[in-house]
Image 1 (spheres, rainbow over the protein chains, first blue to last red):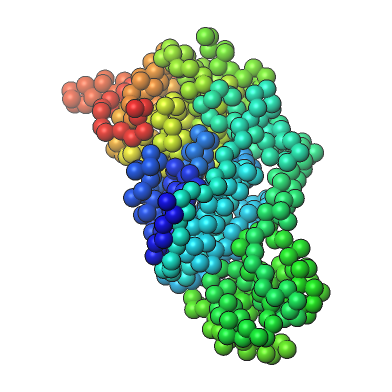
Image 2 (cartoon, chains in turn blue, red; image 1 turned 135 degrees about the horizontal axis):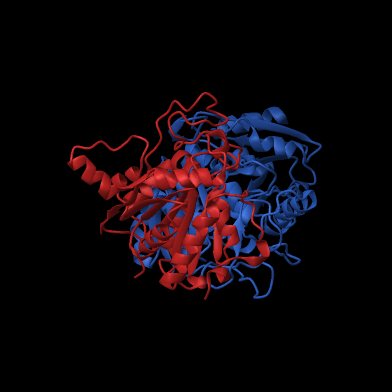
Length: 366
Length: 262
């Protein structure tokens, strides 16, 4: 039965994972994400799942990938320093096409930085942090409800595209408490099994091969080395490597317009805020306070792959204002795609922009 | 089923150098797996990076060739998510004792029900012969051109202290003993660690006065001493020569284990 709760964002994320069918959590404690691990520890054993606290974040993501190969939906949760440690194995998950969900409750960096303060400084690390060329899917919740909903989406996208999917939240949304409506059930995508007789890494038109779950008799070899369609290492063929990497990128980028997720307010506006995560809340307040002003708002729920077609929905836009809790990581991505002015409004240190901060930028821009 | 049926015939020939000891260890492992009667479908081989870690690629079961040092963490996820699977990890001295050291001690402590077979060639073979944590004091490598100044790691001592249920060491000379120990490891619930010293003629032997492949194997024969014999010698007040390699079973116990098949 659908129920209404008053819940913290991190706990809502864990509940979303459980609703989506997550039955394995491997991780390591780190502020401000720890409540996710704690809630999974509490709940997973009651649902027939496995919780394991590993010796570090490298092991956490490794265990998650291992679990995923048994056909289990698996996740980890961390913050900046742990996210940095995970980077090599994230590349492994991409290369081996392993579905999993990685939650990053972002805090102030670099280094140990501000463990208890909010930031969005890992948005480009999420996109580019592991070595080599690849593409990722990253979702950015802006409410406790979205911590639940987008976690469910993350699992479904991971299964569908056989990729690690990132829930790139921030400390504010992770620790915020709000009303949460937990539905009776959620749409839960199941991994498409490899058809017997098909090569394990041979993809069809959707560019996503069927999944050869361990223990089912496929006898599949999985390696982080460049591999052919049999899964066998083949690291010195330029063409094979190029084809493989291009497919891994294309299966995500080719779908960006169909999977993207956002809220669009006042598409006729000349001045448009673009936001994701916690700063969206301030923008929403500005729009609420100046509802007659015709201010536009593009709120991205999915930041990567970046669906630039969304920008064209604002046909009259002269100016995009991009408040972020970093020094303008996504505003530069937006600059690449628009002819109009892009005003980055960076904010570091953990506090949100105030509505007055943003309204002043808006007035100056006009 | 024969041992050959465990091999991925379409991937042969393998990449190991002529005279490499890894093939012996793979043979011993497949022989043990065959003897215990495991089904291919239920058996997973996992590895990290290095010469040893290429082994699962030649075995026809499901296999996961992972990142450097992390095989045990991946294997832990597999075994916990599906305890019905039999999980064997191939690793080497660099993979296990250097970059993967932290995962090694914690896998032992958890006593996760997997069997780890370590091909210890005392060198980084895949990258061309750099010193490893098990390169002997004074041993020559490309990064210890004047002899290693660091004492070597005792991997069996580490596994014993950290809590593994079964710990043994042999060499590529001791084919029967090694096979028997791997079999015992497969049978033992909890973490089993079997180290096998292996000759590496290409990168270790030729730099360390083993002109022929057989010279290093002969060294393994003449410079290993059973742990029981070493204990008896010590009890009698006799000194065990410092260059002797302790071999045999170090630990056989029944600590609580994780991930055991229900």
